[in-house]
Image (tube, rainbow, N blue to C red):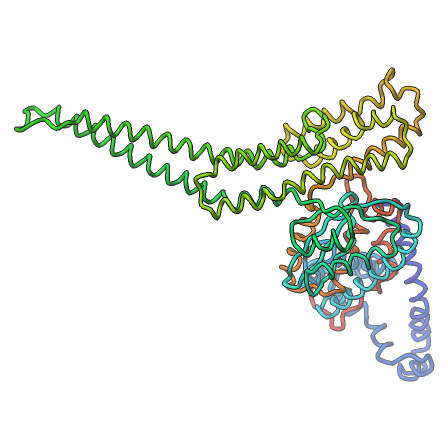
Length: 559
């Protein structure tokens, strides 16, 4: 067991021992004086209810469990252990997980702890509500200090709405994954977004420079007019819109071409079979011989044309599929294969090339399908603007740092592309492409450790400063609100299980995400966002939560 666990058990045991000393002394006094006076007289003298005294005396005898288990769980250490078990069950099952209070009650029953802990739904519901209140108290306790000591910085936001069916506005800082806003609102208008976001940022020394979101009017109004910052269009919605408009129609065209090809092949084979049957007859039938060869030739021509149509349909489907994937691959400020800079003009040319291929492949589709493609195409100018915004911001960043021209060039050519490709590699799903991007990132960043390289004469502290600056510059480019989409999925899963999330429960869920869930490096979103450590949320709850209530009626079951 960890030292922290042992210390918490020890402190809890001492606390329980102190609380029980008075009870134990009264029981001993009664045992010594029971031959002289009744329970009623003793209870009056000691100021204790007689029923309470009777409960103390009969407690252990009424538990249907192993004597060894009773001796342990009725001791201060055992009670502290039960306290930790019940608190952990609620925290893991209902707060960090998606289980319900009924699941906690079932766990207590099946684990054999119900003779020692009240396991009814109403009792555990009170525990759950107490835990929500304690978590809200935790944030109110630790956030002011974290905000006060937080270094001032510029941040981006990723925003979206989800529905339960109430409208839930979610805003996150994508670099740290810290939830800024997660709140039920009355509508999705820009004014509503302005109110909740500005309220959440009022005590933070941060400046919002851009918002990544979909093309919702309320979000765009909130970004451009409310916050007066750059709006970065979510890259996901561009190929998604293309897919919604074309995938079904292209699949239908392929299916239709396949059916036509199969029909013509059968017809062609039928003509061949008729010819063979006619020629293989022992006696030639009377009359002129049918023109089988002409019919077979015509059928073969039709078959060739149908096969060509099928290949074209499949090629169109493949072209659109590849072009959609290519949009995500080329929409970067640096080439993911070489690390070379891609300015806004270059990215515009690459994106336009993708749409030219899509338009060519979908020219025979309906106007409705083409309108979907055009709707996605309109976002390209915003994507190009985001590339220009990125390079403008990193220039301002380095101007504020007063970086030397030599270091500035190295940042542009090696460090910022290297850290950007590292971020891309972390998110890439294709293993082969992930490996290639990661290798290119390492190759670019290798300049920091080269013995005869440009940084060989720099001190370790100077290199760390440049590394941090390059990583922060790379993080300015935000092209997706996927972190919010993932969070919305988690909330939907929880809402699906319990059918309703109160404002208090939603607030508690936000706190668990921000102050408990950890990344691969072992840090919480709050630690990454505030750039400071905070006390452990679960240990705080152990101190604040009441000790488990005892069952009112004993369950005659073996533990």
